[in-house]
Length: 383
Image 1 (cartoon, rainbow, N blue to C red):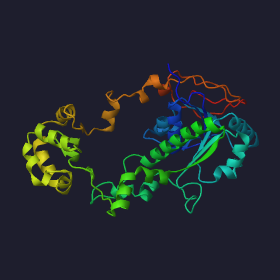
Image 2: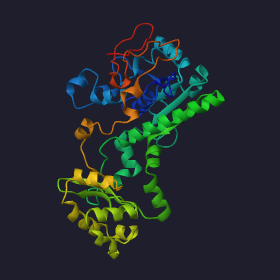
Image 3: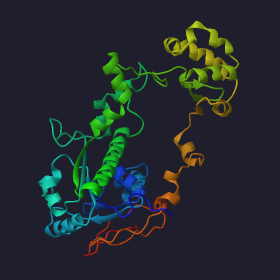
Image 4: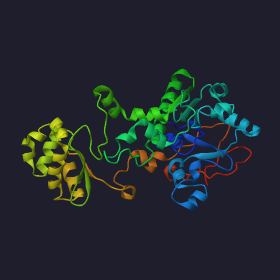
């Protein structure tokens, strides 16, 4: 099997809940050896989060399971002298240190960037926080809900009657984690050229604002504030969710040729000559009228039938499904999520910890249980 890009890279993961664990999970999928550093007797807060009370009680809540497969774990108390010495040894043998404490917490524990760089000049140190390590909001606590509101994304989610709405999953945590993973990979590539590590300051708010590029840049350029549009796409029409015979159907006929094909397939070629729908800008201005015309025709078939017919003809279309249905489907399996691409290789030899993961397929390996380690600080790789 080909070696994965981050094989031989060791990550010390001091993070909790989602943004940081999601970042290190991506690094694990790319081949890194990830060792979670958890507070003795408590561990990652996500161990106790999720819909199943019994899993929460035993410290393997569903929220924890989602982001920590394929990792190892060791309990370290950075206020304990012996543990601090062990942690320093681990830093000397690591490639990446990842944390998502409030700004300055790790430095107050004696492990700010100057000390970490002294221990390991090649270390890539990434700190994820709500608002960055400096500035007037650096000490403010933040969760995904807070960032969604401050970024402006809630104001454009929903309809004019329902906005502001929270997006249905922790999108800001996720984007922050992906941003951190990208920056870490870039820093590792840079280290290969310079031989030096670096400090990365990742702000969840800045990451979220960056991800809103179109909404924000459109406002900055045009001066027109973005508005909540429900299931419709502001940049084109017809592009949104429409009612088929048995439920909702997404159609994104963003190009003129796609609109023409759509009209032909629903037997409404007359729409092509209607002045209200003659081009993209006219269709955007008469979006509601166009939706009514299309849905009258779309109700003749099921969403699945339209999905197959339109997609085959080059018009992007798909049913609106649910999480249970998506989770039970195998039609979207990709290389990034297939077991074969996640099979771990042996970690690069280090002074400590030295145990290899006990599972043979990272995607099927349960996350590590939280339990006291041996005197050698070998991380747990199995429950």
